[in-house]
Image (cartoon, rainbow, N blue to C red; front, side, top):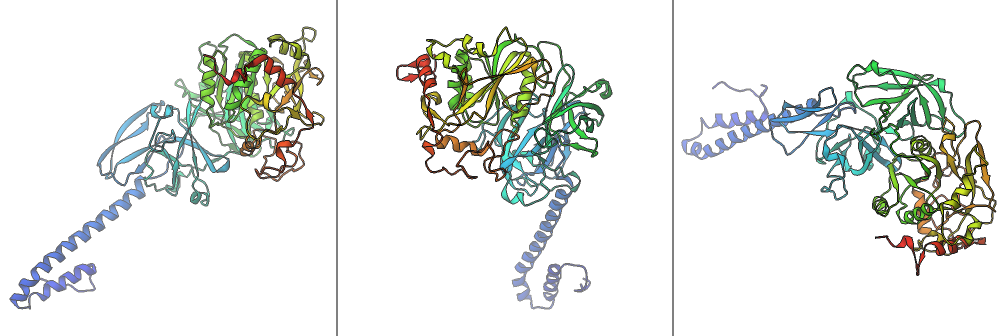
Length: 618
């Protein structure tokens, strides 16, 4: 045996074993026998050490090359499962036509397919994930999972390997894409830039992020969030471009950009730029080839700044068939209703039956609710109302502080099914003093206020509001807001709500929530309080009013918690910037006792000691 020098490249442990073996040659035979067991143990320990080192380096090599974050344009993300040991596995791939096939990949670990999605950072550190339309059927509906939150056992996996539960948030009707929400972990919030998470079934997965595939989270304050196609043009809804109400950038500063998955791009001119609404021409679809991908991404380019606004919107051509799908296209699928009602809602299930019952008896034929991510039992109540013979439709509208844009969206979408649209919140009830003597409600009562044969060119009718106070209520009155709140402020009516002829709405779709801009030739009629007024049950019992602190839906109204513009008329007198009940709240805003609508609704809808909306019709 050749002598092994310590200066050689052999590891120290091997050198030590060599020294032990050399000494055994000069020791007595009895000592050599006693040391044979030690020799065998050292040989075993050496082999184990080399095996461990080899496996460790092999693991790092796999992580560094195969496991990475993929951008939103890719169809899958491979994530290592620590407890897996398969040598062959399958992964999904896109065949270029929007379909998924499987191919086999060789690896010493099992791969997991992360679902393709695009993510937006919402307020309060919520992340909204919009899953690709080609997602597996498992993601198309809320399914139960180990998390117990209706998310199907899915998680958001962030770039620093932190995870949070993915909550099912519904399906966007206009793009047929499933959405999930999750909270950004606190230790991820300190890592800039914010990278889009992966939607995964394995919260214990390990991800090594590729430097070449860092896709930043889209910010809720600057992105294209929806599109709508009409016969003549395309409408984009965009946040963060026209920042202030009444101050809009010129249309020629922008271009609409249409792009398919093959990087084919078509740009068209923008014809209108008002608030968050941009209108532009349809693209020439022949530019995308004979097999046009139906999932064409559409965005807004700021030509003067040579940059594009991030987008989650998809474009679809219009169709003239009456059986057209609901996604982003307009089609006349039902006879026009004379009067419909539209509002944006968040957790209003407890008020909804009273509101729908009241207005349906006054002539409202259809109710359209833009659901701003409610987490109460809204769906259950809507289903009950429809089973009871009412016509109530909900549209998932997850975009925060976009009430004006939502109403603009509705003015286009509903013009094919409704002639007049009433834009009224669920705590607002039109009341005319002349109705007091009516023994029963009638659709002629409300119709006489907005439909007049002598005023053929009336395009909009508006009613002033009386803002009602808590009226000594400590909790939500179970018999309804019309019964529980009976006194209002003594101030000049500062707000109004409107019933609008949809054909008269200006092409720009400009509105300030309470009323729309009208086309030339139409007039705006304002009804005096002696003829009709809106009972706005605005300042309710404190637990109900406190719930409003979570969000305000108007894009141009400051949130309660923001210290900006403290003297705004939109702020509540005596209320600070925190959800803290002011002293004497139950008796505030009670200058005039007004129980006229309470008595009228009791006569119309009272059943013994209860109201009709307290009992479901069977």
